Length: 96
Length: 496
Image 1 (tube, rainbow over the protein chains, first blue to last red):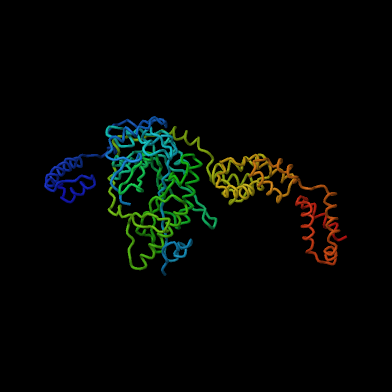
Image 2 (cartoon, helix red, strand yellow):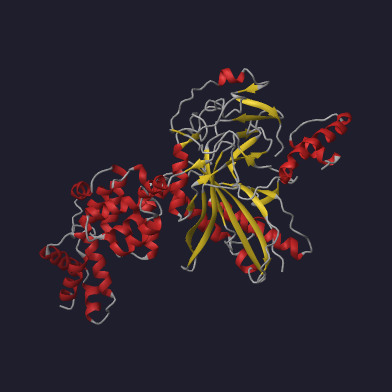
């Protein structure tokens, strides 16, 4: 199944990736190949196979006790942020 | 028929228009679960901490971290599910809901999609005419809250506080079964009461612990097909929910009647203007691309675990109200008011235990005088300003005839202001009711002697002067004469 140019652009937008228009034909082809590969699964017989939410059969989620185990380390973490003020991370204005 | 828009939309707009149009409302309520730590990390959830001091690497979406599910959040969701008679999923699955917004640094929210932890319960609301209506709860699922975006004073930038990111939420989704703004509010209040009874959410709406999205549509009365709905986001007060829905219903009806079409969109309620308005930033159709979160395994719950949680459920609001009616002989209305919160119900029961046999008197005082002063001083009953035993002490003095109901109100005011007991106030102010027949007779005789003209008129047949003498004797005794005794003695003495 071939992806259209518009579908590739849509996927890029949803992933917030900016693609060089010159690269688009290449993405169309390579993404189409990936989708085709996944499409092969549709030819497999799945009668009697229960849907899985996870590839680790027989394992279930472990739970943690409701305890505060983290300390305030925001000074350390905020050293990675491009802009900080009054303890807040600053980002380009989010339209309301 | 057109309806004025804006703040002038009247409280019964929905019903007036109900002749031609039917309103259809479904609510998505977000209740923050009252855990100490976050749903997937060990960061604290306390409200009001300085920005980003409760956001750890998991909450910040750093590479290489893994979410680990909080057992208490699971237990709270199961408590809610059991309380509404829902199915608790033996297996539920966490999914990623993808969207880019800086208040969720991972680029997705961990939520539940195809297999939520709770499915298919019901809640019963009481309508204005006293009839009852069952509202279906489609599902309730666990998810993480987002951080907060702040825009003020940041010169064109947005400030992000991620303290709230990762706080556990239970999203409670109703069926579209409410038919007016009032029904929607009644349902929301019911859920609010329930989560507080269950001690799974503090219910603090100002702090955003309990908020709701309303899906609203209208359709011609009698039509089966649903109209196009709009979603009003993030309303955090009962009053605003009512106003927002009323406004939105009127807006949609006017739009359709003037030839327009309702667009499926997200809208925000502006409390200052009393209007809903379109959220432009979300105009583009959302494409959340849910998929199972590979970082989290399916959550599996054993039947024995679910039964253990069921065994710990407290008496629930409806059951408590029914018991109050039966046990204390209260009306359905009184029982409903007194069970509106666990604290209030416990207080009432503590009062009645201390003055047995006075359950109706206790109900009147708790709902009347006490509720009034609490409201006036902006206090909650749980604040403990007047312990139940103190109020019971006052009611005991009414019950044993030491003071009249009227004097009791005076005593109550002093008790409220000073913290003294009823007996202390009665003794220090000399407010004991006069029950000594001789003393009341002497007071009557004095009054008769002072008002010979009125006495003559009464004896000449002017019966309504009886009240005048009651008033005069009460005045002479500073209101302390026992009213029943006074009446009886006056009837005997006045005719001469």
